[in-house]
Length: 357
Image (cartoon, rainbow, N blue to C red):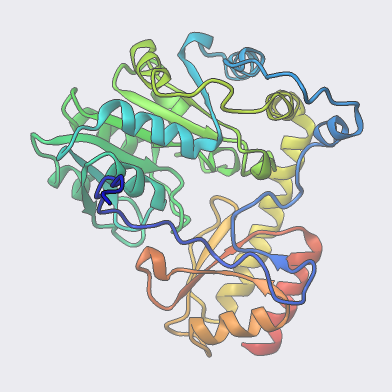
């Protein structure tokens, strides 16, 4: 009997971090760069209302697009909504990549750039990071006639570093016009550096740059899967051809609107992150654990000069019900990633750090 055969696709599978500890109901999860304070109280109130679940949501998420347009002062017709920024990345890859096209990603960067590119037949080229930072020069060295998309997250996950607005402008200026630049602004709201501007701020009039954003980080809505993209009307129209209708729920759409409208809660999250990232940075450095200067809501911890190696450290924190993220899948040796948590979580992390290092 001859059975249907799926396509033969050579792709790396996404491998996430550990999210549960056996027999522990609520471990302190500091591994996924999630919001320390969770969603706006206004969003929580949605779930206290009587919800009409029998009806389909708006297939184009127009209310959310209007709210995004109003919040960021951008054209509603240049916005696309996705089930997390992951879906935006996927839609762009489907829209622009043909078999044997090339894409360029930083050697240590968000894994889904390479995965979605490979699923669509692309050859992935890896640009060297310099001092754990995205390198414009190393990226430009890899550009060829086959290059279709260049991906950059700024700040970058998992390294926790960023490049300046001038470096971003240099990158776009030196890329051929027919190459799409995709800028991931996932952590933009956290950054307070004077030489930083988000992709949305820099490229809001670009015809060959697309921005993706997420509600999973500072807005605390990771479980609801909401993301959005911004680009020229031609780019957004192309991506919409591949977007399924009803790709986010009505509850998700309403939550996204309320999250954007609660400016006070956003500021509270930023203040919390500034305070605790500074405290954690000093504590980590005092233990000879090398890490990045605070930029987003996480740290990359390198244990080369520390009392313990990364595997030993991981086990100690795990034994105290704290989950950190191993960096093996990113190709980063002897390192772990730490998310800035709430006050209780950060205090517990520091307690274990002081006791064992």
